[in-house]
Image 1 (tube, rainbow, N blue to C red):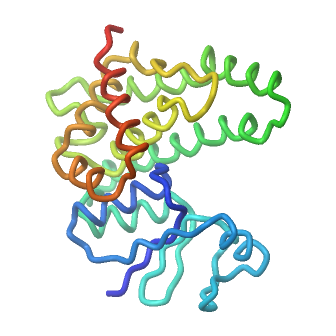
Image 2: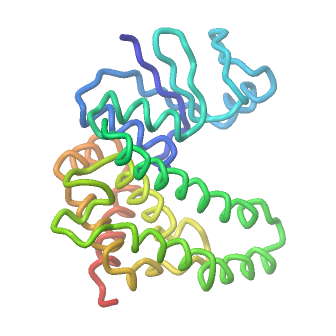
Length: 231
């Protein structure tokens, strides 16, 4: 099986959940990382330089044996299945899917502030997000982590749901997005413990060591420090 995953050269959750799933499952794949200029050409033409069609002209995209798959959720499920991080049980699969969809919802909440060019308005939007919308979603997610000894969203082992939320919250807490409270997750105990659990998973640590640049490694380390602060 020939697998290629195409995204930008940074560890955003939309691609990391797929990359890490394949890595953990020891599934060989081509980790193609494109530039902004390359993406501009893809948006104009709807295809890569080699002629591969890109559905919806957006990233990430997964290419398996020449066949393309778009959309974060679809890619996460395929890579999760290949890497052994997606449940076979239909109910558990649905429970994982709802977390992936929630991560996408949170992304949608953030997007307007990313596009706002007025710095005053952008700051107001993000303060509002920190006070209301993000805590509301984090409360939902915290509630969905069962009261058991695993600390994972579904079952007793890590799934794509856990990786997606760990990376999404890591991004939100990294300081990359101005005016988002970097300690916003700390009052949600189960969610905070989940992030600590994933952050300290040996395969996750190996992936970070192998693929993250020094700036992103520092952000991961700072994320853990923040998670260990009192609620």
